[in-house]
Length: 212
Ligand SMILES: [Zn+2]
Image 1 (spheres, helix red, strand yellow):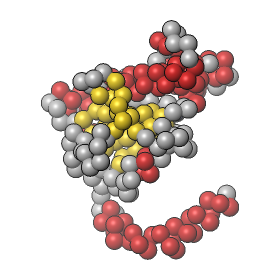
Image 2 (cartoon, protein in one colour):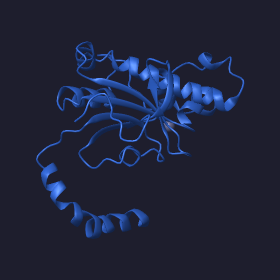
Image 3 (cartoon, protein in one colour):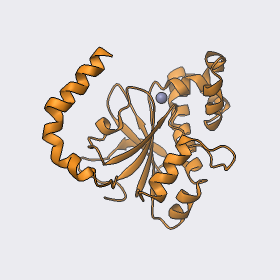
Image 4 (cartoon, helix red, strand yellow):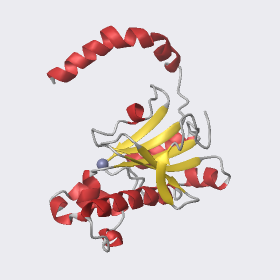
């Protein structure tokens, strides 16, 4: 814990003093631009890759950036995050952010590797089936395609949540699918019109569908 303890001290003594005003304002409440559902992976840091500050993103992180299908029988933290972000904070956007080299996606492709991980296996029920990429021979392409399919699947799952569905129908919320590439630092986003993931944003300074 030594490295972390040193970091806490550096934050308090050197970083926080420059952000005191911002934290003062935030102590009254938050109005984030988006709910980001990202993987728990330590290499995917939502505020870093979007260059946003405290208060700007409401983040749900779990293995595989999953938005479980809504169910009154099987509620979990991810569903509570979605309900709170949409119903209480009224976030205008939800971003599902997958990433390269995702251990969870690899787990879907190699069920044997997660055979003894009961909780992980059950959680993977919310992800796509490996059968969907069966026909792809190249392992890297298979993983990338599964990662993209998973993001799209989670966007569909989001629409099963009553809080999201109501706003989605009225076009009051944007649903965005991303894949972050760890090596290049690039974000690719699902382009509905072209039916594929494309580098995003397309040019410097372009904006998302809704601003806040
Ligand atoms: Zn991951």
